[in-house]
Image (cartoon, rainbow, N blue to C red):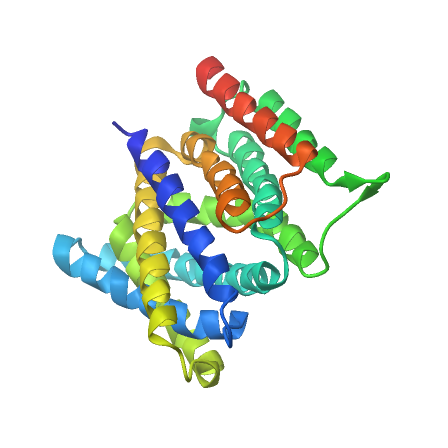
Length: 283
């Protein structure tokens, strides 16, 4: 039943990302507004989940050695990633962002198979390369790589930071419960980001706030399931199944947000899906 964790995480996160784009399209909602509201909400929602399941938190071994440093480093990476991501999402199409998001995921797959012996599965390397090249090909227009202005920093940062963040999380989850880890991380992020963007959170409509609560609830549960899969099944298995999430978001954006359906991106996603299946079966 371990396969259900990443599959459910992918479904919930795709719903969250689709709602994120809806929220960011509302009047007076900027990526600063989104950041100022979402991260305190994420902490509050995770805290409720923590109270329900009561996982261990106040244990000395959870902060032994360099674990607190790794938590802090993971928070810094996540803060930068989210700031760049939501700025890009505010200005770019959701389908475009989700297509590009596959590239850092495959860099994580490759990095993990190289540096972690327990994750090493060479049947994954070749399909991952094929899928990566398909995504790159889908963004070539008139012999040039096309990417929106604010999406380029997100892509560059993600390709570099994603394998590092995955390695940190794998190490932390050897000791930490996924709920406790997400609670600490969301608390630290809220403490940093809310003071920075609190002035952008005024005059939020009731409709917008309901959407904020819904999208953050979906996202919090998704990440806890995702980390649970990391813990039980490893990075590669989790990411292979979780890679259906951009597929779901892409077609949700086309159907519900009227993003343009592009032939090359559709082909690229089909190649990605086939690559996932091949890697899963062969591995």
